[in-house]
Image (tube, one colour):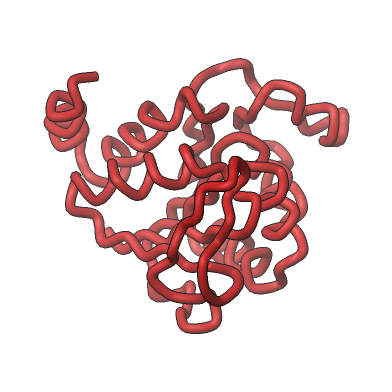
Length: 180
């Protein structure tokens, strides 16, 4: 599955790296697209080098769009017209998309959370409208939307993506290899 994972300065490094690594173990074709050129400085100062810049890709070429959290990265996703349009397009096309942690705010900014079941990092709900509130669950799947809570749930999120977009057997194989 061709998977697009955007990252920006302030993205949560554990969420990004765990998603990238776990999905690649399942042989998903993962492309990491930086919103800016060069090294991305993640939320805890870890430097990440994307595969490409956002400007070099066409989001329509991908099957899955997954956003890591981190407030700095989330703010960048909220302000980036290309990311916002990709979220809308994936939702409209019935393609798999999702996020973890604070990145639910980027999905809300794109207008795709209304009427959906989702989860996010505890406390993020204070930044969402009263009619759009998360469930208190580790991972939530609603149609083609997959969401998760935060750094400590990143493996479960990635494994759920593999189970839903690949197969439960493949997810179980990757889980066993990770000793989870």
